[in-house]
Structure formats: structure tokens, C-alpha cells
Amino acid sequence: MDQMRKTGYFRLDIPAVVNSLPVVSGTFSAILEQVAGIPERETTTYNVLLSVHEICTNIIEHAYENKGGRIEIDIQMDEQSGVLTVDLFDEGRSFELEEVPQPDLDSAPIRGYGLFLVRELMDKVSYVSSQERNHWHLVKRVFAPSR
Image (cartoon, rainbow, N blue to C red; front, side, top):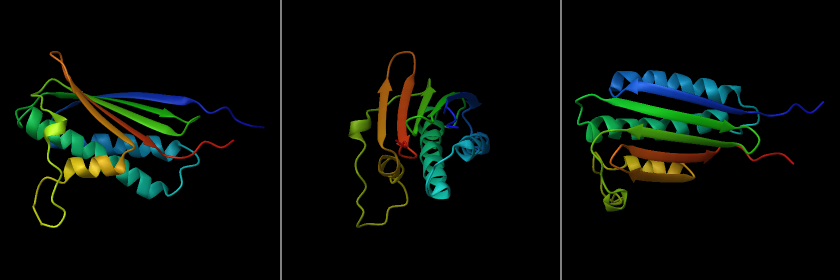
């Protein structure tokens, strides 16, 4: 009998400190562990975790300048379409995503690869800032739906 697949929705509201990242890792790992049909599960989970950690770290270091705040993370896993959607919100300092330069892959800088990696690992990455808060929107198809 074909079992109906459901959409899972989760919300995290964490302090904007590096010590909160294990909570984020545990949550995403648990969510993706429960989803059937993910090919290369370890690689997919690692790529999603790396992307979300990078955005959280940028929020902590740049938006809040390591002075604390909150990060709200909305996670939606649509098991019908195989699409994972992650929305991150903060009330820190904003910036212009388009103004972040692409890293020079021929040199060896220590910093500056984070957003490049996120864009490479996720299917969609967007950032919008308003007077109320900043909003990152990440999308990753973790498996192709079966027909």
C-alpha cells in the first residue's frame, strides 16, 4: 500500500552564538534522517548543514557582530516534492548580497568562501532585508519525487 508522504515543518529560535550550532546540526540531521529516498544521504546532510552553519555564522559575526541576538530558523521538508526549504531570520545589521565579491579561486585567502559555498551547495539562495528583520531563504531538492 502506498503510504502518503507528508510535509514536515519545524521552527528553531536560538541565541545568536556559536554554541547554538550543535542544536542546529542535531535538528537538521534528525529531520533528514527521517526522510526516505535521499540518495547520498551523508553528503546531502553535510552540504545542508555546512550551508546553514555558514549563514548562521555570518549572522552571528556580521549581523550581530558577536554581541548576541536571536536567529529564527523555519525548516520545511516537503516529502512529496523532495524539497527542503530553510528560512533564517535575524534583527541584526543588514548588507547587500549582490555586493559580496566572488572569491578568487586561484588565490588562497583564509576567509570569503562561505557564501560562495552556500550558493554552490544549495539550489536557491536569496537574502532580503527590511526594517523589521533580515531574511535568508535557502532551497535544496534532496531527492527527486518518484512518479
